[in-house]
Length: 468
Image 1 (cartoon, one colour):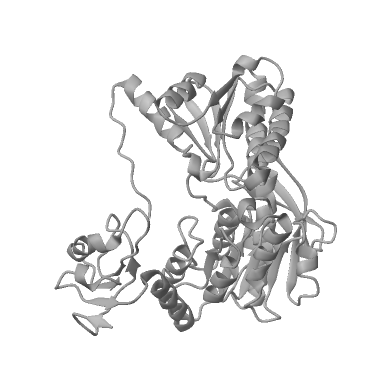
Image 2 (tube, rainbow, N blue to C red):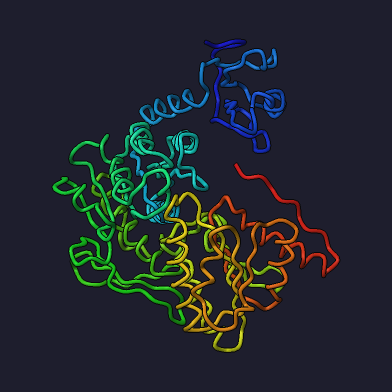
């Protein structure tokens, strides 16, 4: 039902009064720690022209509102209706790791031919996906969206909402083992993204991922990418030279070398998947000139906390603290090692700050110990100046490391004592890796380094801003 008005026109939706809300429909989402119904007056004052609510008694008298039983579900239905009305092709991306990076690569490649809609960050749940779809306008040639999961059945539900014209499966790893129980179950969940698609709709999938070959066997429109000899788009090499990062890909006509601003072999693999997807979208009528692929790759930019390199108080911080799984932890360590080994050989200090990988269930101790073996190999090849391990399980990583044990700093939690211990291990001139699951809050370390630098310089630290 609509209370308070009719014939209203909105230019979009909004969910946060700290962001621009003028001429939008303000969606009053609620969660365990907040209820946006409490901010309806602020939304009206900010210029919102409509509210989507479930508590009519909370609405200001002069704000027209659509009253629904469940705001979250209504947001999904609104997005599905807009996706149908707009009629733009949708690329949907899932996978244990690499979703956001692949999304940004696909966006950048397709944008060489015109505007493409995509979320500014990892909007991959039943709120983020609808907001991504609703952000698209008639000016956009396509929509590139992420689909994530934390429990069985979520990917299928979100894929039914998005109705992808092309789907990408980037990887099958050991994230969320506590919810799924096995890698095979995780693979089935990822593969369910294709279930709502028409049989001939294109699917781009990582041939190196476990269980996907048997789950997707015989599907028309399937295009494999990866290092595997049977991959249709095969990664044949990657590395770094004086010109930056490069990778070679063979799509059946011999290896072609590309440049990319994204470090690491894992990102070269993501780029292969994105190139395969862009070519498949061209076959579906979304113009893409392979001759401009280099332009698109060079334009790729990732959101913060994804191997974001910046200087804070003389410290070169490699911030990859957005999230972590066993696979992404290994990739981050190897990428950091590759990027900093020359500096270490010249006498520079390297520090890794690693936190717990969450949601791994009973396998958590074993998987952290396995990570410790990778950490030990990195340290053996070029010793690390300090190893800071944050959390309950991360400490197990240090057990595999030899040499001077005083380099290993165990931090149970990031309280004031933890803050002091972390900062004591990091000196100006260091190169530092930050990597942990999001729940550990390792991104705070970057803020602490900025505060320390400001205190040393006698200046104020800029206030942090809230994201969407």
